[in-house]
Amino acid sequence: MEEVTVIEDPAAAEVSLDPMRSRLLAELVEPGSATSLAAKVGLARQKVNYHLRTLEKHGLVELVEERKKGNVTERVMRATGASYVISPVALAAVQPDPARSPDRLSARWLLALSAQLVRDVGMLITGAAKARKRLATFAIDGEVRFATAADRAAFAEELTVAVTSLVSKYHDETAEGGRAHRVVVAVHPSVKEES
Image (cartoon, rainbow, N blue to C red; front, side, top):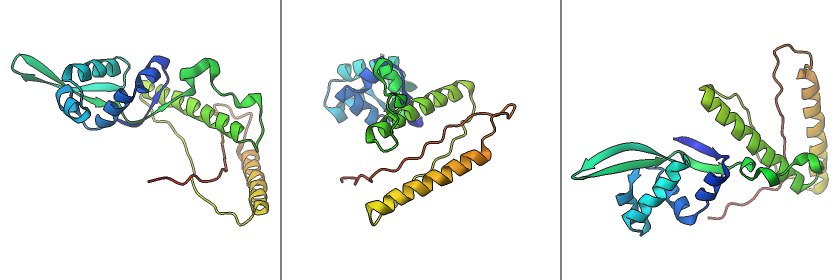
């Protein structure tokens, strides 16, 4: 099971958004059968089995084992991911495009850029998994508290200069066999998690 599974297929995205199927995915972080899940979610075993087959058809759950119980074979399933993210690829015709209105100070542009990041990294994860290779990435996540809006603006300016300097230092357009990497740096207000 992957920590995060990327959903790129529109049909799989639609299936995952059904409230009962979403609940089953959450329950299946630990392997379970239709019988054990039926008691947890308050549905008949046959109805749970129907949902499990649909989730399995779309690669959202996988078979862990089959157990013979009298004349019945019990299928034990588990989710393919502990959590899921739906890639903008699933909505290809309307996925955000940061190139349409590049504005470093726009929250909507940041959202479009973030969607592009989800799309790109999702595609890279899928490709790396198929090739059975590791994917080299790097990220920094932190929090800074600004005393004033002027401090925030000064920080943004210094960050721009520092990142531009680093990119200029290491970027080599002529590097034979080199590989281009995208650098995304974002600053936005922190969101308080509600308990």
